[in-house]
Image 1: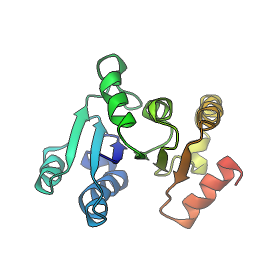
Image 2: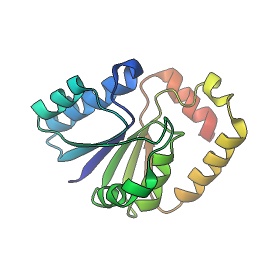
Image 3: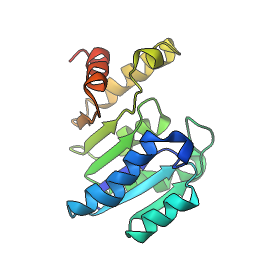
Amino acid sequence: MTLLQISGPLVSKYGGPVRSALTLATNYFPALNLDHGLIVIGEIETDYAEVLNSVGVQFQAIPSLNSNGYEISRHAIQIAREIRRNSQIVFHGFYLLGLFQVLVHSRKGTQIIIIPHGSFQRYSRGHRRALKSIFHFLFKILTMRKFEVVFAVMSRAEYGDVSNVFNN
């Protein structure tokens, strides 16, 4: 496997991020003939699992501990192995513990594509500012390991939000 996609729960109430993860897994990556897999941290609704199965996407669901994390003790080794096996990782979201696991366990030279899905909007930035500042600090330290980190945004507004946060 050369590309691994990591997503939160694939349930219909999350809308856009779910459509994005499914579109990439079922249409975009196969069209480019990319060997890829999908790890879902949380629940997968049956309809979405059937869609993934119908196109032959290798996927696994990791039970979540809560909406912002996952049961690290049971699945950390399994996820770390999957992360190390891949030279490209697509991660959905930003302020999630799973991103730290990606940064810690990825090999040098791994291309990490982050799709923030609105994480940097002004409204979102206003909540838990101290915790998010610590998150940014740790993110910058961990990405100094010669990763190629790319933010994939879906609109000009989101591009502006990412640029404001990272002063680029």
